[in-house]
Amino acid sequence: MKLVVFDIWGDLGHFRVPYTTSSPLTFPIPTKTSLYGIVGAILGYDKRNYLEKFQNKNWKFAIGIKNKISTVRIPENLINTKVAKMFARMPKNKSCRTQINFEFLKNPYFRIFVTSSEQEELNRMEDLLKEHKTTYTLSLGLSECLANFKFIGSFETSEIPTQNFVEIHSIIPVKLIKDPNQVNFLREGKKYLKIHIPTEMKPDRELIESEDFILEAYGNPISVKLDSYIPIDKLKENIVMF
Image 1: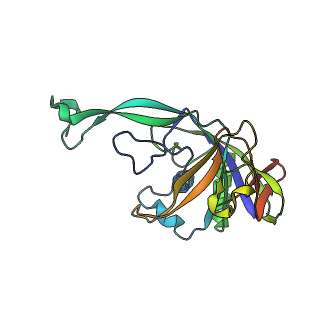
Image 2: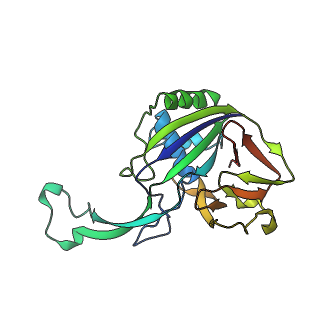
Image 3: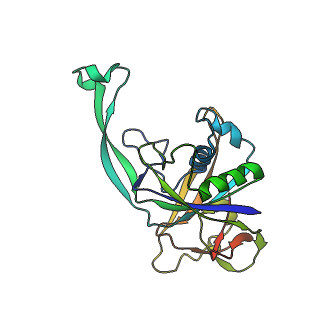
């Protein structure tokens, strides 16, 4: 299995929770559908139909948290474009403007692990990342949340079985944990979160799959007993892909 690994970070990030209305909230990590968008931006897929490229589940990811997860609320002025047809002649009607508090991730920093059965596209992405190039500008959720990135490396590895506790440096799908005793929750200085995020969408952005994940909010590894995991010896990190 070939893994391409890169870091992505920025001042702010926003991966909108879809069921929030008046005050948009953010997921603490990029969703899998957001990662499709990041890969699509690197490779130059059209934003109108890039999801068509990922319908066969040929791409898998793991997400490592490198900065403590923290959030900040920022008021944003929104304009009703149905009322304000021309920004140069903004109506005095107050209904065309509204101020809403957005929740943003503060100084988000993630390590993204990518593999795919589409080797040519994976190799092309690797070449672009090595040269610090992308086809379109990367962002962390919203176009206003511009992101920087760094190529970490390309690694050959494979999934190995285990019956012992292992330090996992990525988020973990809850479906892999059949018993709470598989996770060592008693370690000091840890903050564990369970989140539910979108994982698959149709090209028309209809949600078709979502999953529960466990993560450690301070970026520490999770001590867990799984059936198998993927080691990356050169990075001294172990991951689980989804």
